[in-house]
Image 1 (cartoon, rainbow over the protein chains, first blue to last red):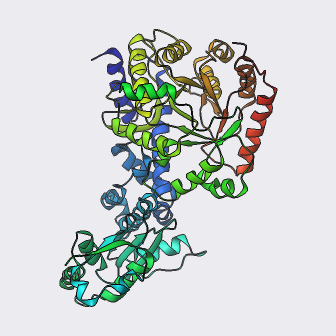
Image 2 (image 1 turned 180 degrees about the vertical axis):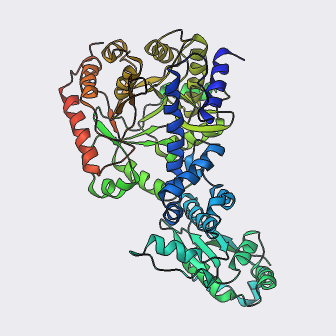
Image 3 (image 1 turned 60 degrees about the vertical axis):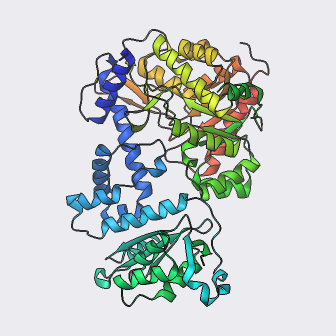
Length: 251
Length: 295
């Protein structure tokens, strides 16, 4: 190992541990804190930008403490910070001080889904009327392709309502936490990210489509999980939001 | 590799950069920039902010690129790092450069990742013959992959190392000479480092090789004192350019002649007119600069 390799390894190690002494030869040693601070402040800021509603729900000070804890354990694995913080919702689930807000991880998942949709690959959405020409006999072989920006977040909590009122309403309206959950559908057919709440286990249906099941197969899969699943409404929602990119008909 | 290396030196930039002032392109200013088309020399973006697959950032940047010259400034290539060059990241950088054909592409004399972790900061390296050879090799590989010359920026530093074998200006001069890269002279970084190491910033400017300098950066910095009472400066990019930095900029232009100059403002980003006003202040000095460089 070369001399500079030794120094970089020592610096990297010291930067990860608050209060650790600077490696020998670093002058003035106390100034290493400027870099430690740069790293932590900038990564906490990246999480704040990615999770604004989560921050609003817990307040700035709480979010800051939670984000700092995450950052200390999870440095980015890539210089592309758009991808940083994907594990933050799962971390919130384990963050004991947030245990009193059981819906918080799913709100964060919805924010993550919206961020991913924002940066996802561009593609033309399937026109809502595109399926009207498909003959009923051919439906058994109909396979739908999701738009690259389409994401789903299933939750037992009304996360779409929580997200909406904390994003769009001038004064936040109360959300009945007992009003039930659902599947948040997120997509971005052109430049605008859309979020819509779908009823029942639409998540099971959409995931089945995404794994390549035909329309009747996916309908069968979701029927096992949700006997009252409203296929027509969910299919209509997928078409009107631009959540689909195409279809193919297998004989 | 030799095939792309040949292309490097042969291919002129798609759209030459004017010797005017530019500003950083911020998401909150996208609509104003495209809609109002302000009179400014160019825009600069951080490459990593455009490494998503699609969506509004690319749609806006494409619209800006149609209207203005563009500079792509990378912050994550880890040019000064000891580990293997991140070829996946280099491929992403190439994707951005191929997509937008910017007039300038730049990176930093710094390291930012170690052992698979990315620190999101520009960290200092010792200036030794060994690190010089390593950085020359890495810059060469980046230039070969991108098929073009890049600029390397002098860092703002807070600490230095006992084992340095040469000063920063010598290191950068040798890097430019051996790799063929250009240099991005960040005048604010010169002021910040000089404060932090009690050096004379004017002497740094006077010694800097202006021939390879294809771009200048200006920014605001924060001043403070540490617990021993010693002054320090932080490269905060969150305010107007300091008067001391304007004076160093004028001193630079006397030697370099007019050079494309960016106003960097990344924290507490103001309304677009404030950025444009700072750019006008740089443009005035560019207009007054001698046409012919004196060195």
